[in-house]
Length: 114
Length: 114
Image 1 (cartoon, rainbow over the protein chains, first blue to last red):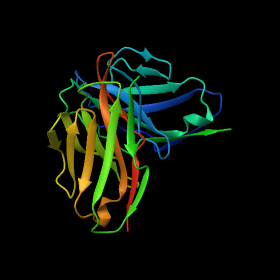
Image 2: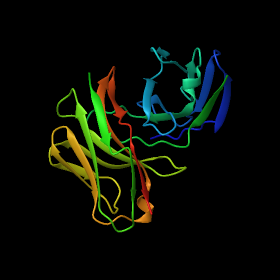
Image 3: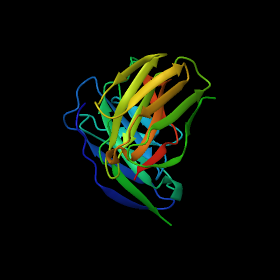
Image 4: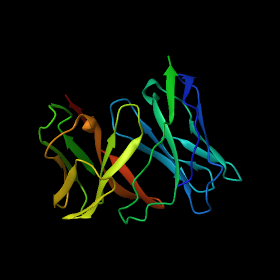
């Protein structure tokens, strides 16, 4: 899996959009960008993934640059409950074969300020 | 809907004692199941995965073992705990989302070996 680089921490005001960057300059053509988050003392939570088009779901939006070397996760209206460590991962999609364990780095600790 | 259960939530065990952590899933059949460990201040490490009853693959040689006696039950065990076994143990299962399988995590068990 390609390596990713994320800032160790970020602050965001409650109600504002939180924009979390991720660099993945060595991403391969068949690798997707995935985002997970982990709230303190809880298991990681899947957020969103994409290949090259921008994606949106009920939790967040994912913006991938045209060269696919970086991406941004956007939480449009951050709340205090969004305080968590956010992990950006690039990997070939899990085909269900079972061997596709996730590897998380240090991630970005996002702190939402009241 | 599908849910995943883990127990106990927290556990304090002395060095040399045995360990048994249980994970069960509801609302699906024949899921891929995973055990991860997250040591303090470190990333997520895949320990075992299973694609079916009695089928266990180990990713990291260690003091632990896993078993899958039933389709929706995954057990993590040790005969003699070491101090280095302390950590946050997470069970996960994979679900098809959009274009690939995604992993969803249980609430975790925090193990402290004293």
